[in-house]
Length: 126
Image 1: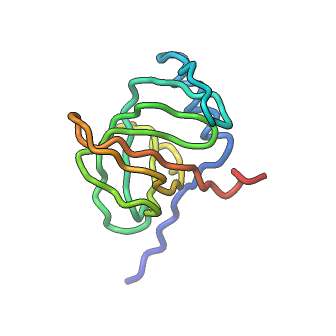
Image 2: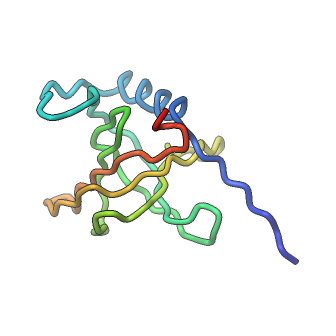
């Protein structure tokens, strides 16, 4: 029997909600550099997968920073640039929508790998 799996993809509203949550518990990153959006550094737990509609096991990762354009997190797994993934806030009883993102960089560090991703949510380009 074939089951239809529906996944909930978040867009600007979910990115904004996660940004506000991070801002409430974190602190602004004052380095403007070549950034397009302000960035918040905050300690949030996230879930990551590569196929939310499949049997892909969830990985727990730790948020490093977030902006309206992307996210940085710590992972024990190296990810190649260009890889598409899905992240969401960890929740035991209220699953949040997935945010689609593409890996922009992966840097080895003492805590594992710092992964930087650009959001690719359906309404992010509007």
